[in-house]
Image 1 (tube, one colour):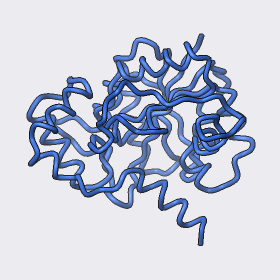
Image 2 (cartoon, one colour):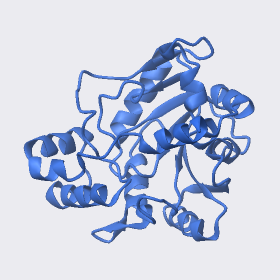
Image 3 (cartoon, rainbow, N blue to C red):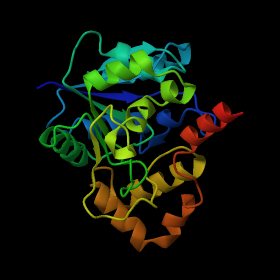
Image 4 (cartoon, helix red, strand yellow):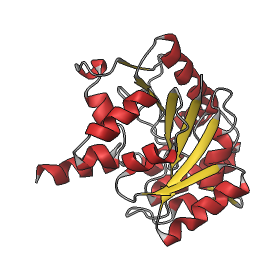
Length: 253
């Protein structure tokens, strides 16, 4: 059983340029993100998939510093970037992560991987019906599902956001192509934001790490926010999945 995680990272961002290179206590958000992923016990390999743009060379340098593999591919066709980054590695499962989640939780990643394997799923995530904070997003899917999406996905939103073709055609959404399920443990924390998409997000994460450190569980962070409304409210007005929503609106025009 081979499980490879891919996290997408780039310096370009319309809402918060260079966000993955922003630092907290001298550590970039990207490095924090990668180090937390590496605590996973089930992931066999991690690939940092960035773009061919010159300014994203710094992403590969951070990966090299941490002794991790990187791949440079398409700027907009992120689905192609993911698929090509595997370079004939032929894993059984792929874990999709995104670098705007600096406080991603390795234990949660492992739980979702194990759930996917135990239930013989083609696709599983904790985002189909989100009960975890935005910023704790994990998707696990068979390599065969990624390959099928790569061959058949046509919409811009499906190429730009990697997995919509899979989950839109999955059993959880009423489809028949991919057996899928949502991972949840009874939490109701989908209203919280631990992601970094906008300046207020970075302010919140900075406050959070300064208060309790960068090595806590997702639940520690969630509990702290629930007990500190002033910090929790910093980014509470931001809409979840705004990037995907914008892609859909463009297609509808």
